[in-house]
Image (cartoon, rainbow, N blue to C red; front, side, top):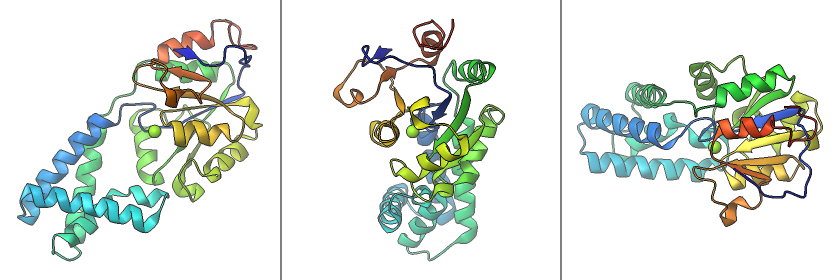
Length: 250
Ligand SMILES: [Mg+2]
């Protein structure tokens, strides 16, 4: 863990906001497993070859993102699969589209696991009356399901999705909505996320204290904008309650 600006006094937060994807759990492995399962099913249901399915789905993802810009539905697997099947020349196939979407998320969730220490940190924050919230980019249905799947549904005071806010981070809208729900001044809020641009820069603009989760805290250039860079929630938890944060007793 690296505290980037040791001269700046770290004061106890009244609230901590967490990103979800690739912050509370590792995203790449479940995504890879879910993609493989979906491609195999598409090959079977559509009678197309794997290479065509892969290229059509990649094209579909890029087309949907271009069409929608940075908002929740630009990440919708339902839209990607619908468009991918259309690109394969099969017109709109609703049943197969719904089936692929279910397959994707079912496989994804079954390969997801929280990073060690996440639950303990959330419990410790709650025990000290520090409010907790989530700001996450995607549609509410699947993000709610993920949080429930992890058994964290009673660990957060508020959840804000980009579907609810109308735009993805780093747009100010989801941050403004979370601040409004919490009713706490931004300078008393910490933001934890894995994206230097979306989470850290987005929250820095409001004057929050920012924490970047990385796979290995080595201190590269993109990390410099965060106040703290860490790769281990257990270490972060120990640091928070070590007496080094002003106002948080050990
Ligand atoms: Mg993330």
